[in-house]
Amino acid sequence: MRDQVLVANGQGFWGDSILGPVRLVREGPLDYLALDYLAEVTMSIMQKLKSRDPNAGYATDFIRMLDRTYPDLAEKGVKVIANAGGVNPRACMDAAVQLARKKDIRGLRVGVVLGDDILTRIPELLASGQDLANMDTGAPLSTVADKITSANVYIGAGPVAECLAAGADIVIGGRITDPALVAGPLLHEFGWSAQDYAKLAAATVAGHIVECGPQCTGGNFTAWREVRDFVRIGYPIIEAHPDGSFFVTKHPGTGGLIDRRTVISQLLYEMGDPNRYLGPDCTANFASARIHDAGPDRVRVDGVEGAPPPETYKVSISYHSGFKAVGQLTVSGPDAVDKAHLCAEIVFGRLALDGVTFAEHEKLIELVGTGVCHAGIVPAADPPEVVLRLGVKSPDRAKVDRFGMEIVPLVTSGPPGVTGFAGGRPKATEIISYWPALLPRELVETSVEVQEV
Amino acid sequence: MTVGKTRLGDFAMARSGDKGDGSNVGVFVQNEADYEFLVAFLTPERVKQHFGHICHGEVVRFEAPNMLALNFLLGDSLGGGGSESLLTDAQGKTHGLALLEMVVERPERA
Image 1 (cartoon, chains in turn orange, green):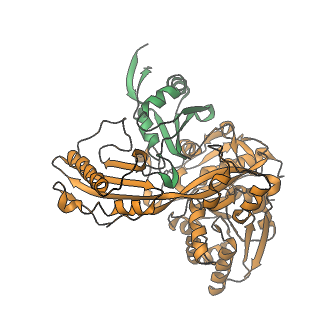
Image 2: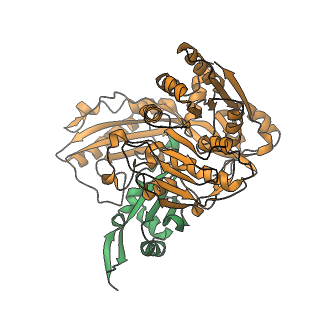
Image 3: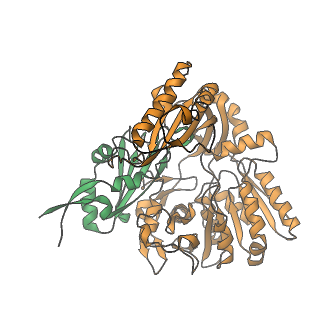
């Protein structure tokens, strides 16, 4: 057994910079590269892509990333864990294998974790008495059954470790939890028992700290003026030890900042009850972690306590719930604020003339530049110009598109100083809503497959 | 003991993000004395009042003394949340800095 393992996170979400993984692999030592490509509505977008093309439905950024890093990964023996598979992990595996062949990388083993995608099982699950009730509202899933666009179980470190044990150098999965991308390799390398909840909790805390990439290395940090060299910001690396303790660090010479404060900032991100962080592997107590500065850009975390996981898995379901459109234009001074308010009145007034009306909660009027982010907290400013953002939502697509056509005419038929229509007419886009639910663990079966290049 | 007016941001840090149709705001300080003050002063009621124009639901508070931190859940603060929201800050990314704008009356120490 190794006495330490280095696991980096090179991707905090689908859309994160490709420089993250590329520089992590090149600029220092690494054992594992964890990459998170999923957000709550990503699966739904991927299901839509897959419905148009049976070979689509995964994060294509991942294949672009492999195209840049394959030779370095192979040469240094860095293993990759990614939830890039989306709703089509096998197609993602095939693409990764084909790319490796094209680049003449031999002997590489690409694995896949299956079993998280329960979209086609929903009718059977509902029929068998599972109500998959919305965790926030209590409503049964049957109320939106005809609008469901994706359904995935959050799966944990166990199947990732299993895929590594089966020999995979690259592990591709669907809805693997963000922390499990880090906890999986640690479970595998250190041979921890799946009932060693304190160690799994420590690995979950480690995974949570790095899951948003540079958000723990100086990104989005309150004291941003203390952060050096944002351009070359280092992505985070967990230096993990068999006893569950770990250090948060980054490659020497990279930009950014790691200290107790940047780590605590990220521990609090998207946090609910810090005493009970529920996951598929364990219940982690974030309030038990001891966090110490341990040198420049180096923080030690230990003492994390854990308990068994809940008896249910969390399920991420998304469903279609209407349409929306947002358009914006710039209004210059003098009197920018008054003129922007008038523009909003004109748009909704003209729509009403044509018989198109929206309820208050379906409308948005924002004067960006006057303090919309901190409404009622900082005094509204009277700036020399404002960006007027207008938006609507409705179950009726035609109404939303009609709204989009009434913004541009303002340039010639409203107050003076209205500009910035470069985006053209805003078009209706689908609203995908999130439906969190629970499913008994025994109803979910995961499996792994490994292919050699 | 004298009392001085100051911004929460003068001695605390924060991070925020989305939790369904609400946001979470984590706020923490650097020493025990400030934490004691924070725990006593920063009640869910005060936070709810501060975010009166933003948070339309309940405010729930959790304590994490190991991080000298408080974590607040701000219910119904994102205009529907996720892809439903029309707001510029649909994910509550700026709510942390909004909390740090709070003016507080803190005991002054030597």
